Figure 1 (cartoon, rainbow, N blue to C red):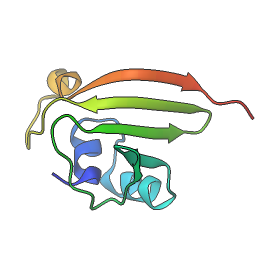
Figure 2 (cartoon, one colour):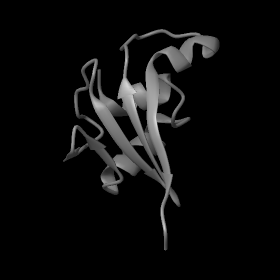
Figure 3 (cartoon, rainbow, N blue to C red):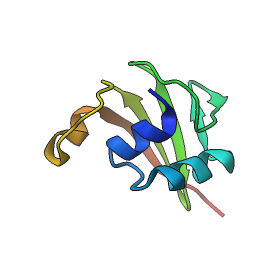
Figure 4 (cartoon, rainbow, N blue to C red):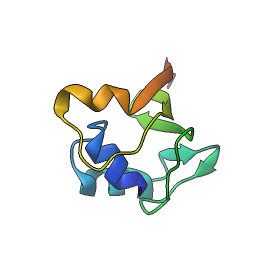
Length: 86
């Protein structure tokens, strides 16, 4: 599954176009490598996403096409959340 689609389905980022923009800005890494919106994810991949003053590290648990809102938290596990200093 593409990175931008996963971020939308898991509701980490609300819109796919926004996920694409975040990836193009270089704010997402997959397993330590800078990611594009078209990067293909696998189960077990580690994502690091920079949201403003926060960096979130999460692990992909499962990739599914259709997920109900209540089940989105089963798609990933947050490994670490850290506040960035400016």
